[in-house]
Image (tube, rainbow, N blue to C red; front, side, top):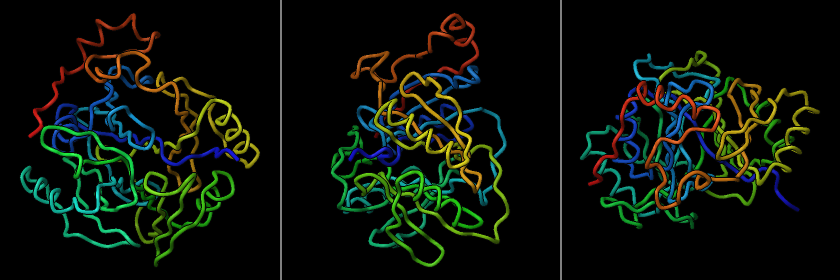
Length: 315
């Protein structure tokens, strides 16, 4: 039977300076810069995409860099940590690399059967690198990062919640997730075939204040579904369950619906198609500003407003 929900599709976060964002994710972390476009709902702001070589669902991290914006406050009702999957022998390399670029990180820790390090980007976004030998995906290879160390895509994301019951109910009853791990206040769920890129962790933190968004905050998390037909089934299931998903929105590279989960985190369900090569060749992803046809008449105006960007030299 076909899975309606495969796992993670992408993560979208709020950032400050767009060039610092490119320098960190395409430079220090070595992700491929796969698309330079605009926030379709606020086109005077970039929408920057990073991922593996082709922007495979489950590897895509995106940002709205608003420039001079205050930092968000960490708390409940948010996606607090975005975790990437790296090979099991890679943590030593990454600790040395983070030191080289003066990125502060914590000593390796263990959770379930994996070892990981945690750190933040320059805007305060919570990140982890999770070492494991369960991930067969190929990472993007750059001049400074070889295949034996490259980031392969997401491992999991962590939701900080006041309580877990209603969010867990949504995941298990209406979004085809399974509870696969529990340790103290942390619960892990997986979807689809399971494994890295399919995990959602819920951490119960009832004593924390409510989060508010700003730079360093995750705007939403998106789940992968195969196509428009499977997305339509999910949307009907959500409507019957009393949620209020949006109509389908055309995001050029995928089609999306959005809704709030019970704890307040914005969820999206995104189709895997048409993908990122729909408006530029696969070997030239991210090389020029791409606009949807409805914003194309404003290209000259937007190019004057948007800060010029350049890819860093990866070392």
